[in-house]
Length: 426
Figure 1 (cartoon, rainbow, N blue to C red):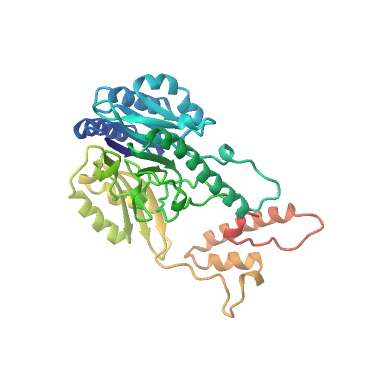
Figure 2 (spheres, rainbow, N blue to C red):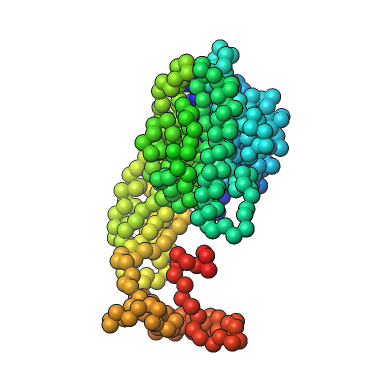
């Protein structure tokens, strides 16, 4: 029995004003060829098929055409589970129709545990494995809110509820598997120790930061989605994130993308193999001083071009204020004819040195400073003209006056400075 595990396609993603349709189409064409070439019996998409709950029409077409194309390959089954970006209703609206195309859709948690369990068949048409199809679990799916619960209580309750849901589905799978079939489980969540990227949206904010590996059932393989970097979880080779097939943010630029092929022999896990996904459109992030960037651009021009035009991000590190930075960097790129196919999507500035602490020379603490003092000290860290300094100070005073005006009439004290890590709970 051969399984292919992939996830986080994010069809329909709108990236800095750009569509990813061409990249996704190239990936899906490549995937169809791989499925046929490798003799895949079942394909698992572990959540976030779409980037939003209301995907654009072209994203739905990519999804539908892929399912139809899969029918002419060796693959006998497609398993689709919902992720946190997916709409349960959108995925489930076509599940009965797609069942006739050997596609098993689990958009969200079902009331009947048996609806999340399926026997998978091998090339000979015989039972080859059983799958526990666990989608993204929303708190409302598995527990009821209790009055007076602390955030720690809610986190613990949700963790236990998700673990219990896994055990319930796993128990149903064991009934079908017996001693002769391996069991595969899916999931769409963050696990303890998982490596995030900037394109990953935290999905249990304030309730469950990460799911402990020890709470997973004893499945032979656990196919996870949500984290976009491919990774083995807690050194457990059979628990894996496949990662996204294309880079979904610039901080994923340059990292390998992959799908995972899992081989079973009888009721045992035989082999796990990572297959690298080709780079269809390079996302390139350059960082350094202006002189360094110019040198990097020269080296970039000598690189072999991919099928689709590369997208470029440039981050300038400097201690000094740079007037009209965007235009200056654009000219560096445009000056090189060999980079005419590159699209510069983002320019940003980063200070070379960390900003000093907002305290005065005599170690006065932040709590002892007035709001105006904090602003003026922060302003001193920038190299600005007198006109710019006056404009910023005037704008700040206007904001401050608005804040004072809306304070309680009985309290005319200074606005409270709330630390960043406390603002969400304030």
